[in-house]
Image (tube, rainbow, N blue to C red; front, side, top):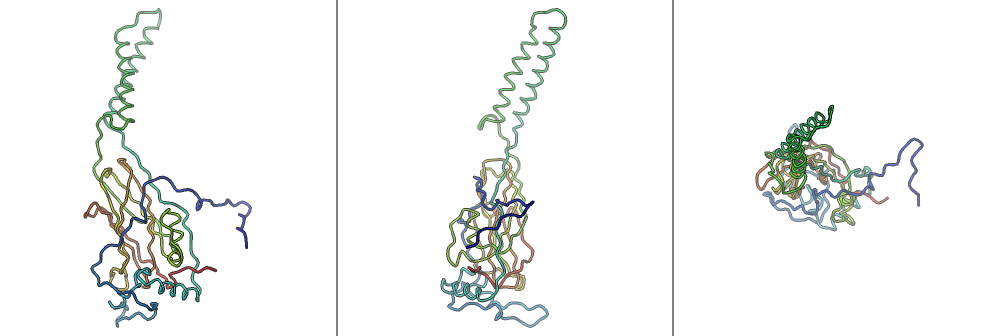
Length: 317
């Protein structure tokens, strides 16, 4: 058995793939559930789909027929029977599938609580009082010593108590008045990592392991950057699906998923969420995302057309 190659001179070994995940409360792939679709439900077939046999119509731009798009497993390989998935994986290994990649990062979250206006005001007053007390102290000790005046005593007391109160309001939870910022949200596709196996994705997201053929299924990992303000106590969910640009951007069956997006008890938060999307058998596909507050859409994001692959499973060489 061959060992791992050592880094060349002048190179640094990249250990990011083995780094432990943070304790951030972020997207959990195991909580995702399929969204009920309005398209006809396809019955799993006993035959492996051949993408080259796809039906087309005449015209300048060939378009897939509806019967083709609705074939079991056309949009989602997992919609096929287990034995059919194994046959497809074996057939892929008969050819020369492209190499797979690795995820070099974990889901992450950066949160921050806005400082409270009342606490900042108290600190400003306290600092001013301490400044007055300091000036009075210097004047009293210039030349001959004189008794401490009431201004110096009162200013020192106000300054010390003000600093304590201001820090308590700023740092201690539940103290003072908390003003929540108005709700604001943005979501965008930051990066796309192609040809990631389900097993690799499950390992990096600490989700349920995908074993056997299912763990060998390949797809793209789409990194979403979600910025939240004022959503401290509001449950959010992410809905996403794949579409076929070669079939009038029709929804690919079996690809619609909805999953909760947990977030910290903070005023402002930015999350980096990796979403794994499997390859359909169409030539290209797009992924679209909707951030939901209940049934209401808060933000939209989508990828450009991504190249699919007829090799939807990796091989053990």
